[in-house]
Amino acid sequence: MVQKNNPLHGIKLEQILVELENTLGWEEMAIRVPINCFQTDPSIKSSLKFLRRTQWARDKVENLYLEVTTDK
Image (cartoon, rainbow, N blue to C red; front, side, top):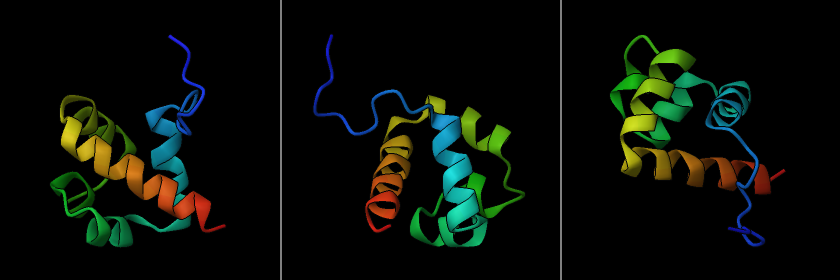
């Protein structure tokens, strides 16, 4: 399946989290997307585990990433 119009095509979830952490930091990420893996003892590993299982949260994080990267 070709994904011509998908701006996230080819970007891994880990890359998204690393970019958001570097740009916003965990505290700001937790404010914008209030999920426990960002609020309590945040790490890339725990966030990946949660977001891979929870589609609604992943959608919010991906939307935040698009918002942050298009503002640059």
